[in-house]
Length: 295
Image (tube, rainbow, N blue to C red; front, side):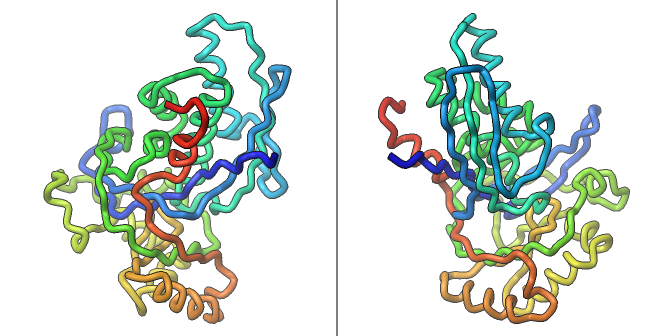
């Protein structure tokens, strides 16, 4: 029997406002998260020892910095601390990396969430979603939305989540070959940090904007170029702090038609670009709920 390929879906920030800055330096955000059907894939094979190993043919990062390894160790250590268990919790994790790194699509956070959720199931630990989301927050501000598994209006640093159901459009996503530093964007003095807080009932998609966009466009010409090119066909937006840029379409065929034009463009032809469907429910949760013994 072939091992299950567990998805770690990408996300888009359909809007992003900053309403203030906390004493600890973190920013108070309001954002809308929606998943898309474009994912990394992870396979898990339990071991008889306590070694936690990540394998990948196309993902070069040290084990110490690897958020997948950190998530697995965090889950193991929390269970041992909570229960005093002396069981072995070893696992080989194979990662097929599809989501570009540093693109504002949440790939690393999603990988961490998939690791927490799947190993909680395979190791039969029975942590609740609340407990897993709390663990996830210690790994990164975006991890809880992937743990929860629903499209959400997020507040705080991104951890206060309210389920919402935005239209599940088709999206063209273009990722220029540049890494945008989130730290640099959020520390930029020109960043707007005083947006008026909005309520869920006042969310109007036509008025959604990303306050990080002006700062990124000023400092990253390739992202600015991507916005200009996509804007010829539809309203272009940036996800998170970039570098990914996206536009929505009513149908897959419309999105693919523009995708072909982007690929034929001498400037953007070699860039990472794809079409994906918006999802208000994570495909990972749908698979988990179908597993024997799932709650």
